Length: 433
Image (cartoon, rainbow, N blue to C red):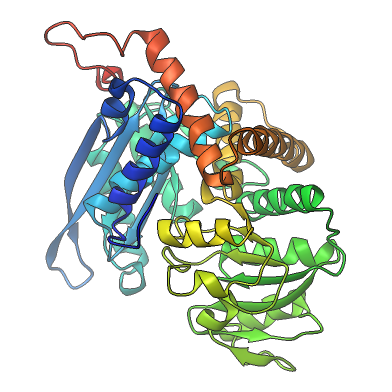
C-alpha cells in the first residue's frame, strides 16, 4: 500500500489490505465486492438498571463479515471507544485470521460501548446478559461463536452462555469460547495468544539462523499476551531487555527477571518501579536496540514517524493492528522480518476453535494436547505464508492476506456465490436463516 498514513481508520486499512490481496492474486472483481464489507451488522440497545436505581441504555454491535468457510467467530469487547468502524474492521481481520489458520470459521466481532472500570459486577452482568439476548437471533454454535476480547473475561463469557442456554432451554456450551474450564472452557486458552506468538518468533528465528538463547527482546504491552510471551521467551533463554504497560516501562541491558516483574505488577498494578531496572517510555521501547520487538499493546504504535528508527530484526505483532500501512513499507525496506498480527496472535482463535470442537463432542483434551495441536497449526500456517512470501517477493503480511483471501475466494466460488445471484438471494446470508 503506497503513500503515508492518510487515514488510520481501521476499516479503511483492512479494506485496502483485502483489495491489495485480491489484486495481487488477480481475482475477479466480484471477490472484493463480496469481501469489502460485512454481510450483516446488528446494533442493539441494552437497558441496565444501575446500582443507584437509574436506568441507562448501552449500545452494542455484532458484525459478521463472511461465513463462506463456516460460522463466524470473534471476540466481544467492552470499551468506551468501541465504534462501528472498529467492529467492522475487526470482523474482517478475523476472517483473514481464521482462513489463514485453516479454521472452519468466518470472521465476526462484537462490542459494547461502556467502561468496565466504572461498573459494578452486577451492572457488568446485566450488560453481558442483555447483549447476548439482543444478538441471540444471529449467534449460536452453527451461526456465530463469540469469545472474550478487550476488557471481557471468562466470567463474562459464562454469563452470556448461561443467558443463551436459558433462552434455548438447554445447555449451549458451544455458543461461546473463552469460558471457565468448569463450564467447558479449554485448558491452555488463557496463554494461547502469547504462546502462539512465541511459536512464530521461533519459526522466524529459524529462518534467520538466530538462536533464542541470548536474543534481546522488547515487549510493549504487559497484558495477557505480552506477559505470556515475555515469560515463555525468558524460559527458553531469551534476554527480555524491556517491558512496558500503559503507565510506562522498565529496561535492563542484562535482561529482566520476568517472573519477578510479573509478581511486581501483581503487587503494584504496573511494571513501573521494578527494582534494579531503569525507566523507559513506550515510545522509546519501540526503537531501542533489540533483536525481537513484540508490540502487544494498542493499534497504530509503529507509524511513518518512528518505523525508520526500529532496530529489531523481527517484529512480532501480538496486538491487533500495531503497525500502520506506511510503517509496514518502511520496515520492509529495512529488511525487518515481520510477523503480522493475523498470524502472530492467531493462537487465541486457534485454541478457541479447539474449545468449540471439545464442546460439540463433549470430549476434552489435556493442556499438553492443546498446546501441541496449536503449535502444529501455527507452524504450518507460518511455513505456508513464508513460502508464498518468497515466491512473490513480498512482505509476510501481504503473503498472509493472499493466502487467506484465496481460501475464502475458493469457498465462495465452490458455493456459487461468485455467480450472478438470482433475484431475491443475497450471497453469504445463510447464517440468519
